[in-house]
Length: 218
Image 1 (cartoon, rainbow, N blue to C red):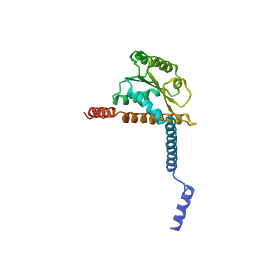
Image 2: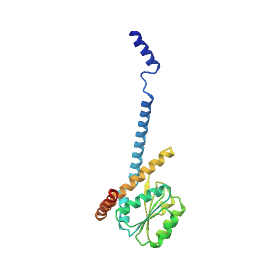
Image 3: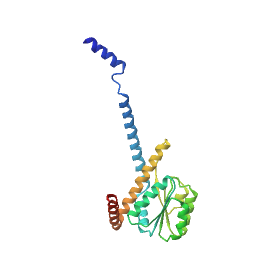
Image 4: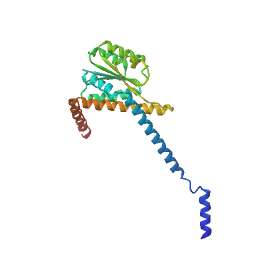
């Protein structure tokens, strides 16, 4: 029996008895990565909040709430956020004109009236076609709200009001994730303020959500 214990002890020692199994080490690494990502998102969202003062956001809420129509445009990845936000505005009973094609949006400018609002989603704010669309919209006496990174860019410079997103990381793929997370945070905040600013819109939201739920349950 003592020889057996000695043999087992030698085997354990050879295999690194006090070392964590590889899968445990992997789990620790994943946990650390998850926590780093969570903290990075928190920092980016906090920076985004500070870059968009409440008064500035509420002014944009006033423009959107008082608009006869809200035009929404974005290309590529920006188009995904634009489409989702356009849908949420529709649930609030806002009359929305949404296009992911700037040519089609340009064709709809004839319907623009003074006080209408154009929300333009463009991460870098450099696309000439979106800048031209914005200028044409302003020529029709509409108001342009740009949603871009917190950088100097033509779209932001010529907009009537701006929302900006902070997202910085040495790794490009992480930086892109931070941008998406911070942009979603900013849009969620804008949506909540719209709900609070107009009780009738909030009531209509409840009605529309109930209608959708009936369709899903059917």
